[in-house]
Image (tube, rainbow over all chains, first blue to last red; front, side):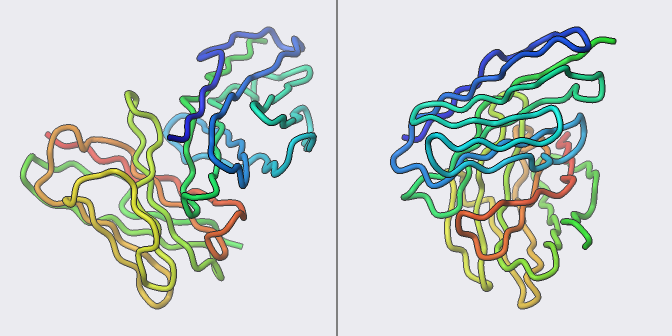
Length: 111
Length: 113
């Protein structure tokens, strides 16, 4: 069974304090790993897709990396507007386009 | 380009009733997937439709069903509502349902009393 575990569950940072969010996965034949951001009461907003180990993607203060067992979302010098829940999801080789999600990391950035 | 739209945004029903939720995908997208989000279980896959056919199904009871129309719009139906069906129901669309990105709508918040 495909499994995705995100840590930590919650993270409090001061503005400007860089950190990393972890997404560990166990999946039969990874086809893609997706990062989303979700604000309260809204649908997930797409951030990155990673397809193979060693791949990296960057967007503003965010950088996503992928290994064979986990992915990291690095946040550099975060701002209060980066506060949200960050979700990681995998797409497995034998599950069509179904996404299996982790529980998310709730990030709070204080000014 | 307009994003994924879902209607209604909020819904209150009582146990035993049924409900129909609607999703309009991004123009040109042919795959529509539905997910249920609850505080306890997180985001869970319900089913996917492509070219009016259900192509994939998650581990939910038969009370949850869906359909897709020729214009790719999709509806999901929940019959005989239970308290545990209270959740945020999210619709996501993608071009062809392969490895490409799925884009989510704002969701329909369903409360069952």
